[in-house]
Amino acid sequence: MKVVVTGAAGFLGSRVADALLRKQPPSLLNVTELILTDIHQPPSRNDNRVKVLALDLTQPSAAEQLIDKDCDVIFHLAAVVSGQAEAEFDFGMKANLEATRLLLETARRKAPRAKFVFASTVGVFGGDLPPVVDDLTAVMPQTSYGTAKAMSELLINDYSRRGYVDGRIVRLPTVSVRAGVANAAVTSFASGIVREPLNGQESICPVKKEQELWLASPASVVHNIVYAATLEGSVLGKWRAVNLPGLRVSVREMLEALRKEAGDKVASLVRFEYNETIARMVASFPVIFDNSRALKLGFAVDSDFAQVIRSYIKDDLKKN
Amino acid sequence: MKVVVTGAAGFLGSRVADALLRKQPPSLLNVTELILTDIHQPPSRNDNRVKVLALDLTQPSAAEQLIDKDCDVIFHLAAVVSGQAEAEFDFGMKANLEATRLLLETARRKAPRAKFVFASTVGVFGGDLPPVVDDLTAVMPQTSYGTAKAMSELLINDYSRRGYVDGRIVRLPTVSVRAGVANAAVTSFASGIVREPLNGQESICPVKKEQELWLASPASVVHNIVYAATLEGSVLGKWRAVNLPGLRVSVREMLEALRKEAGDKVASLVRFEYNETIARMVASFPVIFDNSRALKLGFAVDSDFAQVIRSYIKDDLKKN
Image (cartoon, rainbow over all chains, first blue to last red; front, side, top):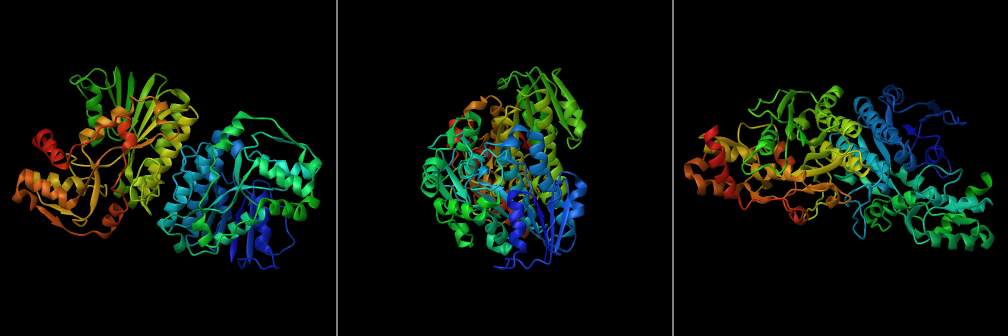
């Protein structure tokens, strides 16, 4: 099948590409052609199924170049992250809402049977939340990032209902531990406070130790994004959005796990410097989820945060 | 204060204008200047506070002509109704989402303190609904009309959070009994099955007698739209949308009330002709609401459907 990945130079996008091309264990999808795109051209790969393209998805012509009638699956992962979308409202709306709309319109016209997998976020939730959040909890985003994602979700659901695309929306927990460098997501510290100390560097935590997060490892999130494309649209019913499974962990628990896995010296590299703006946005995200629908649909979940740290140490630490 | 009403030639828009200009009992707002706009020029009024304007709000220049820095309140009531938005997806999105966005952008730039009152709909709800719907129930629209309204709601909430406008969103129940002629709303029959018989005409009901509706009279809806502009933004908290109070009534109960108020001969003018498409969309709208938040905020509610019919007979029947 022919597959498109947007945001393919990004942290998750490049890992989704890896997972799609993987032979051992075999990819969940039988990919014969893979178009990888991002604002800067993604690194080329030693695989003749792959084509790489530099595209600005906010330009109407971009989707046109990306999607053709043979397209079977579109993984739309490109986004402006939360911190930047909050600081640059107009650009965030353009990249996170309008670009999605342009892709949907092109898919509708050229490849209406394509599966359209959209990376959304639990940041669509906020405000007055019930004690436990599930897939039918009202979204009430308290960030412009969450707003654009929630608007895109509604659009994808309606396009799916009308048969314009076959959409599925995965709401990502905070991803930790991300390899590489910090990004402008307001939850970036949730990787930084593990990654930087393990790399011998100091890390600043802008929220209190008591702050809890809803987390998933890169491995489980990447697996779940690809897995979403294997489902029949009908099993999702009238609402194409699924909250991906995750772990509820406090900053304190994250640091304790780090201390246990890597020692006192490493864990002591985390310095607390409270940032009101970031802390408020992070505190608006829910942390207790009922993921029974996702689990019933077959999405995967991490075992615990210590295991997540060990995976980072094993798979990513030496690569930096 | 300077007030703008979009959709001012429409059924609700023209009544909102009347309510704003009324001296006895006095209008809830002290209006010194009233700009009435619609795609066709609204009828002029014998009141020197009023200016009428024909504008196509999907054109970027329209909002520019409508909103200036002195603008205190914008009632955004213009919309393509549900049946038409379902039949003409692109036009519906343009009129129901993009036009809202253009107005918000102009208000943000020129009059960020303006109160922005948006007429939304209980049609934002649908899908797997809880037994009772309240202001924090997830929206899962099963129409493109509901989708565009729900997307606009998210945008208005974020604009309000950011201080770009002072938004308030009222989700309207089905309005019955509307005076005048049938429109393309899928719930249009909910007025027609009372109005047409009272005018001696046959009316076709496209849904079954058991179908229930969530209704409010024009009078209470108009009152509540204007009332929304009197509230302080802060009392709405983190979510600017309010489900307006209404009555839960079945088609059978509506016809019984009609029979009681106007006799057998009148009630027998309703003919049942099932329409699968309309019936499915109507059945996706919820009918049991917990309106305690709206009532606590001071929004009004009708007493019963018989009273609603009597009001129509008294206020509107003779005008046709």
